[in-house]
Amino acid sequence: MLRGERFNRADRVIKIGFWINAVLMVMKLAAGHFGHSEAVFADGVESACDFIGIALTIIALKMGRKPFDEDHPYGHGKAESLSANLVSIIIVATGAWILYGSVTTLIAGVYEAPSILAVLAAASTILIKETLYRYSVRVGGALGSPALLAIAKDHRKDAVTSVATLIGVGGAYLGFRFMDPIAAGLTSFFIFHIGYQTFKISAHELMDGQPETEEVAAIAALAAAIEGVDRVHEIRARRSGQFLIVDLKLDMDPEMTVKKSHEIATIVKERIFERFSNVGDVMIHINPSDEPHEDLNRL
Image (cartoon, rainbow, N blue to C red):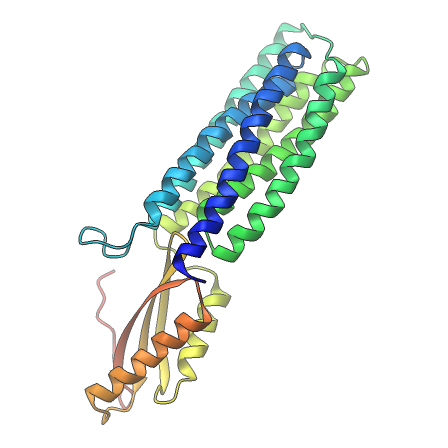
């Protein structure tokens, strides 16, 4: 997949989520206020935070697509992981705000009776957000985009939140009014969990953690199968936005000329690019295969 096509697909997912989230935000805030439901109104405030999070992701994607330059020789892809980190903080802060509001209401012991408008708003949010989650996670997984996957998790968080909201506001509508703030409080713990998972993944990528083992092993197997490569001595990889940066150490015949070994290394890089569209760069180091050697490393 071409670089421009990857970013265009990511843009499309983000923009769809952005505008649908804007509509849901207004709908839930209005339904919560006029429908007298704390849980639905809290859901609307959460959507407002999501709106900010998606806006940050749009900015990160624009930054991340910039090609490498003198100051950033590995590109700007880390902007996506940084964005995912900021989104996770917004998610956790939203959960804390919702928990505080529900506890305050329960302590006061004053509950309003929600209208059918609030119930319908919660039910429609579940359907819309779950659809957005499935769409976003499919494209985000195909592109290997941490920003898109963070947004997808945020959509799933909204769907789960709205299930709890529907139970609470539905119970309150039927006469059990205390269920509305309880639902809002329980929802906050789902939000905390999703925020933690998003932060954990983005922090791992910002610290150059090793990507998925299966993909790294497949790259190593492809390199080892190239004629002239005796063995893959070592492989390391790290994520930079939607791309992987791979470091390969290959063992080759010590009698081989520099020109020949360079040609083989070029073939290895070309084959990796052909097979793995999400690999942005491959650094190759060549070792003689006839003697053991230790790598110099201060890390």
